[in-house]
Length: 115
Length: 114
Image (cartoon, rainbow over all chains, first blue to last red; front, side):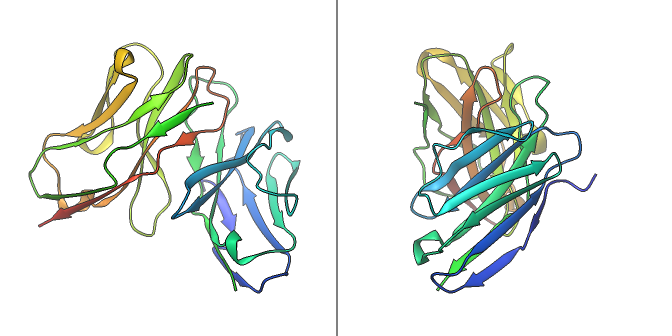
C-alpha cells in the first residue's frame, strides 16, 4: 500500500509564478482533501472532493487558488500567481466514502516557498 | 462552525512522566474526534479516534483519550512518556456523518527530555 502520494515534496518559486501541486489518493478512496499548514494559522482545510466532485471550497483563500480532480486517482492544487504569503506546507488526504467515521490518511506534504 | 482549542502550545516533560494534553471543541451536533501526531519531518498519523460507543478510546503507542460530552472535551493521555514521543500533536473534529473535512486545533509541541 503506497499511501497518499504528493509531488513535488519541495517547491521553491518566485512571486508571480504559477505553482501546481499534485496528489494521488489511496486506491479505492473516493474522498480527497487539501489542507494548508502554516505557523500562524495551523492546519486549515482548503477544499475537498467526493467522487471527483468539489463539495466544499469555502477554505480556498482567494481566486488565485484552484483545485481539480479529473479522475479518481489524481488531483491538483494550482496557485496562479503565487505570492510569498502562500508559503506553507500543503497536505493532501484521502478516505473512503463508506465506512465508519471520518479517518483521513495524509500524504507527506509539499513544502512551498515563494520568494 | 466547528472550532477546536488546544490549550497547551508547548509542553516539556521528562521521560516516564505522565502526559495529558487538553482539547476542547465547539460544535452543536454529533461529532467525530481525532488525535493526530506529526513526528519531526514526517506526515500526520492517526493516534486514535472516537466515533461512538465507549468514550474511553485507546490508540497506538500506549495513548488513550476520553470523550466527555458535557465538557466538550477529548483530552489525550499517556501514563509514561518516552523520548520518541517528541512530536506535534493535533486534535481534530468533523461532523457526525464523517464525510466532511477536519477542523484542527493549533497543535501542541511536545518535547520529552531524556
